[in-house]
Image 1 (tube, rainbow, N blue to C red):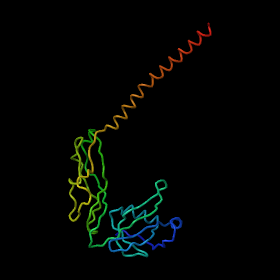
Image 2 (spheres, rainbow, N blue to C red):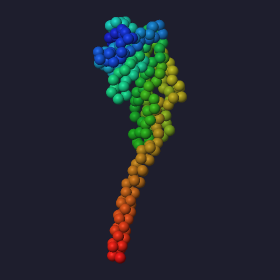
Image 3 (cartoon, rainbow, N blue to C red):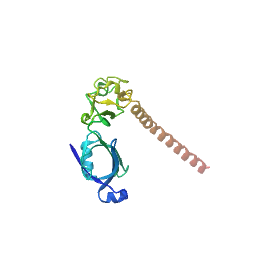
Length: 221
């Protein structure tokens, strides 16, 4: 079980003060757990999150020991990447909970391999409901059947592990093969621009020459 040290937090402590102490403000809550302001060590949490993500249970230690939770939400500064706030969802062993699971593509798409089209990985995560003990590490999706443009895999096409129920819309497209129109368009525009450049240079050169000849004629007069 992945462990994380959690500290009780005084709501009067500012975010700036906590960050100066190497801490990140957070909150813990659940269906039978009253919302509690807490904080975690920035460096320790980053290590835990790399392993746990949003789909692995975390066992709390420290001031709030003995709870099982999931990382429900995480806010970070868009420029610096500094962690601003974390939400921990406390779960009960015998109660189903919603959890976000990463989608992992397996196999190789003939359409992509043969250059027929581009692979569009539209949804890299799915939301499911299950018991904490049955949370899958990931959902594998085999893309070897995607052979031509328009081929797609929807949530309705995948088989979930026993005891895992889908929350997302079954009509959601996870991955598909699309025509490489955008790339071709960019390449065509680039070729057109390149072809026009010599013509523009020639026109400018002719204009300069004509202007010079006109000035010579006026001087001669």
